[in-house]
Image 1 (cartoon, rainbow over the protein chains, first blue to last red):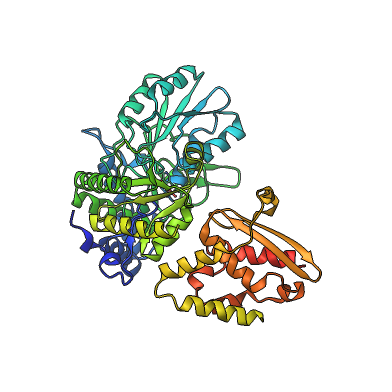
Image 2 (tube, chains in turn green, purple):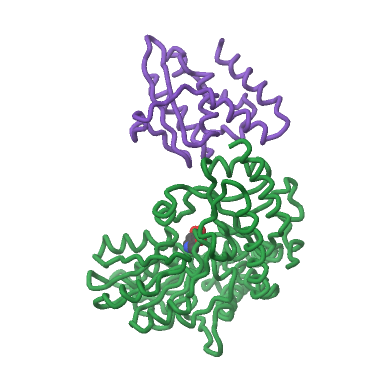
Length: 401
Length: 133
Ligand SMILES: Cc1ncc(COP(=O)(O)O)c(C=O)c1O
């Protein structure tokens, strides 16, 4: 890939940071900054409401992002409809929306199945649902390769009494191991389960589609877009009549003091003034990804991940998480007799930026490793030179630790 | 030595480091000299929150003075504790209570010890002041 020149933060950066934390948030290309800037500079108005040119322009730009997203996540000839794309503030918001609206009438006859490797965003909302309504929360384990154990998943699906929701990450941020999501989706469908895929890490890295899921959630800031914006894809019919998670302006049809009629999908779930600039920027980010070619991005990140994993394995005292499985976009590792924040701090002193600790996925790391870790994660702009810098800086750090 | 003299001493030591990595190495070495901390004192109520790593602090009143021991699983935090101890340990409690944490800026390592950074130095100072009252 040759896209570094699209990022001012990479070409102009005075401190020469090797940014290896793209799984936390990706860098933003200049075209996205410019798109966001143009909104504020030339037509900074609220959407859906005003009868004036700027409001009209903002509305058109905002709504134009739905088909961009739809086109990006569609499969084959079944097009994703605009009414199936809800804008949210991010993955976390999208999952909470499903837990609160879609599952509003779920109770102890229903179950939610998550995997062992989920991000807190795909654990805590379900725990709260369980505590609120008695829904059973089940955890499917990973096999020795870091893949969701499909036999275990099937057992859990069989045991489900009434409704089941399978909510799993396609590419967990704590393992970097791409799941067999098509299989997971198809198996779940065989048992009439509803499927939610957390695509926060996968949508930016592989062609992720909605052929085998009912909900797909992801964040703008991990796919080269702005922060504070995200997507909830919801298959038509699933959320049309559910009680809205948030209420206020723009999500209503009519309001009087006796009652309110809620708007239709997708605006039903977009209460209040949305992150207009963020949505418009997200649209540009997805187009930018399409210009690069998502398959090229996959190939580049697979190459970088292999390179990094091999290099890390050769460093003394380093143990890579699931060393025998290939990774996409991120490598998680621990260092014997060194605390992860110490390692990250010394790497930072050498201008190498990584993540450390429990990565917002405390259950799997506590259960399997019993300690915090270090994560190096990549974007389509990451170079092998940056990985070399990581390895050199790591070796230097370990002389002290 | 006065508190301000201790701070100047440490400042000098760190200023002589050619780069950030060496600075951290020096800080880590300072942590090597911390008094041993008994395992049995690694209690939840002695934990200082606010860092990615665990930090335990135990204190006793020795006459007017506050005597402290502490440890952490992170060696950089141990080093920062050693710095704070060199400045405050075994001082009269009144002096500790009156200590202005803003003086830490004079160490010249704001990017490392600024309260609010994840290493928990801010919470450590707050806890020490509490124990001194
Ligand atoms: C797999 C996964 N799910 C969910 C999230 C939460 O995303 P956000 O903080 O953008 O809502 C993340 C981000 O760290 C993630 O990696």
